[in-house]
Image (cartoon, helix red, strand yellow):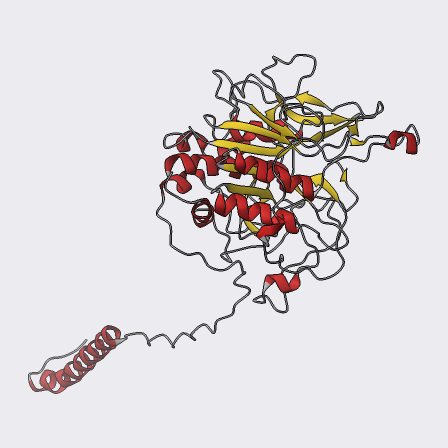
Length: 462
């Protein structure tokens, strides 16, 4: 995970720095007048990439015919019988998306970090996210994106390897870059994606600062994208390795309480769940990943551990390779996090939009939630309404409404005390015994009665 710093807060891919200590509130009412401005594109200030901050490299992995576990779990082969996401424009708001042969239609949507068109990715993160969504099917390769016929538009709004220009002169040579990107550039990027006609917007970045969240313009951008521009916005729930602290959500003493009343740490943009679908992560066994930040905003979950996706090969831009990990400053890490669960759901949203073009963005979200594999409680702060099911999302009939995001809590019932079992029916036995007894008595009486008769007729007994 990397840090993206502004004067207001810090943002990281998948989750943000800092953890709140005060009770969290529902997001403030959206004020349309706070909508961020449109063009011109570019960062709000000049930026730099320090010399001691080389871009990441990736670990080759996942090539060959074997289908990755996450892909098998979602049964994508069957889902593709109904939709492959054709005609859908999916915006990836992230660290940029590098051009890759398996993203043939990639569109550069702009850059709020530097002066590229959005198709430079020093971090590797955005390229991996885009690959999960829409990597093309290639003969002999098991890995492919969820919606392989969708088109990606890349908008770079964050990077760990950049900072405001001139900061290097104020720091020691060995100091790492501050990172660049915040909720304000995220808001601009969301508006940019919506104005470009994106039907799905993937945001695998969140923030959870220790102080107040000044994200009102982000809320306005989300409403604009989801309601006015009819774009399905899918966002990460966040990872607790950076959002440090507790966020219990459920109180075992009061399990049926409003989950918002138990939250101690806000996560944005996930908390704007009336406009965005927030995604948690599950492991290979379908259990909630230990790093998922729970919250009343979680809508669904998807595989988010040990993911395979497209690599960023700076030495060979024409590489068709895949990756299963990043190498940064000599340290290797797996492709894991709610950041990578999110694009699985964004890909499903693209499949649904292609199959059901008449559905609004919010109706698409409801369909995905209604067809997920629900936990026993009906809703869970780690899993939301359950693990996403692409096939069901494309084929099932769904209810008009969903239950509120509130766990059913522990319940108890007084089980009926079973009545005493009926006594054994001994009629047959009794009849047999009585009959036997009667016969025995008659035999004895007959035997005794035979003595006088024997004497009368002179029968001698030897």
